[in-house]
Structures are given as structure tokens and as C-alpha cells.
Length: 178
Image 1 (tube, rainbow, N blue to C red):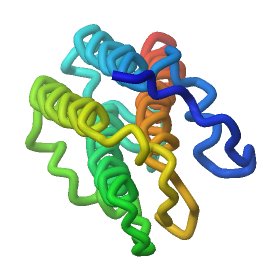
Image 2 (tube, helix red, strand yellow):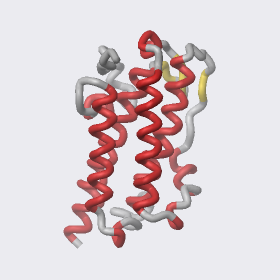
Image 3 (cartoon, helix red, strand yellow):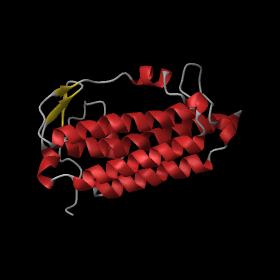
């Protein structure tokens, strides 16, 4: 399979451009595996008693952040699939905070969320491995922004790394200081 390199140019003003810059690796599949392992290692290092911790009033719990990674990846993978088929439908955005309100994390363990993440990420990897290489740069529109499957894939990888960093810096550091 031909390497799926990072996009050559992405408008730095787009909200997700930092996700692309922190995504590790030189090939998308490699990057998705690296960031998958990063999430797994983080969850494995967490104490269950911390899973409902919020670093500040009104912020999501650690479990909600992890569930958000899963939900977001599903939405973006779907967009990548549609765009890879040259679908020109303008796909709507979604409200991550509304999703978090109904995420059912109160009834889920860290282990269940980790298992869900692994299943979602493995599905994402399979999706990108199965795409026609010519389709990685087909343009589509999602949430009023032009995107390609290539951009979306790298965005997915960097997004989970971004949230791992937030958990480590904000949630775990505060827990240490308490």
C-alpha cells in the first residue's frame, strides 16, 4: 500500500490545523496506530477512581473526554468515507457538548470506553487501508469546510493525541497537586 502522507498545505486558520501538526509518523496508518497506542497506554495508566474527575467545574470528566474521542472519530470517519466516494453533499457539523450530555459515561467503565475506542480506531484504520489511493484528495464539505479524506485521517490521529495531552496536563497534573 502506498504511504498516505500528511497534506501538503492546510489553512493554519482552520480550527483543526494544530491536530495535523501534532500527529506523529510519516504515514497515516502508522500515525493512527501510534495515537491508538497513546490512548491505550494513557487509559491503562489511569486509576478508575479518577475517571469521573473534572479539572474544573463545567469541564468534561476524563471518561467524557475519552468518549468524545470515539464519537468524533466516528463522525469524521463517516465524512472521510463519503468524500472518498466523491460525494459532494455538504455534511452538517455536530455539537460535541450535546453529544457529551447523552454519552452514558456514568454507566460505562474506563475499560468499556477503552474497548470502544480500540474497536472504533481499528475500524478507522481498516477504512483508510481500503480506500482507493486516488480518493485521498477528493474534496468534500463538512461543517461548511472543504476537507479531503487525507486531511480527515490526519485530523483523527492528531485529535486523539491532543486530548491525551490535555488529560495528562490538566487532569492528571491537578490530581497530583490535590
